[in-house]
Length: 223
Image 1 (tube, rainbow, N blue to C red):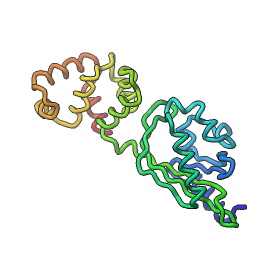
Image 2 (cartoon, rainbow, N blue to C red; image 1 turned 90 degrees about the vertical axis):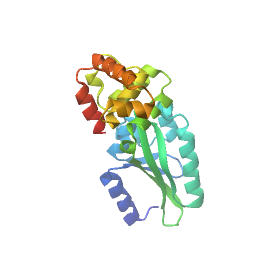
Image 3 (cartoon, one colour; image 1 turned 120 degrees about the vertical axis):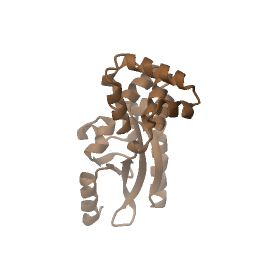
């Protein structure tokens, strides 16, 4: 049985935290509560999440998070056996919309009046915006072997796909990402070890495929 003060504290944390937070029964593994941020990752309503286990969620999420269910199960077993928190400072997988989600993971034991682990509180802090554009693109290339899908997801995630009339090639996208980091084409060429004329040729190809090149650069630099 939970201590009332502890339960009140946990409920308040779940409802007020800006992080992705959920509470799980330690014995059955069933979810007891979740905040909206956590639900949005799975694209589920609370009624579709509570009283289900990670293996139920895994049926639809396995295509996005691969072996995450097995990893989480192992972490939670460690919490149950030791009564201590488990922290992973950098985890990366795809949310239910297929977008990269880099985050910290903190799983903490919630003790009952007999000092046994009755529940596990999980907190995930979103670190995705701390990724550089190059790192973000690298993750999309890792998770999506189809280059067109990887490019599309990257453009959607960074909010610039609406500026494109035609998808850029992988090389054009690499040039574009690098151009967002440097003001001059000469600097892009030096960074990528290309000739300045080669970079300018790719930039011209990109311009032919977009509605407003400057708006794209502004959006990428705001990442």
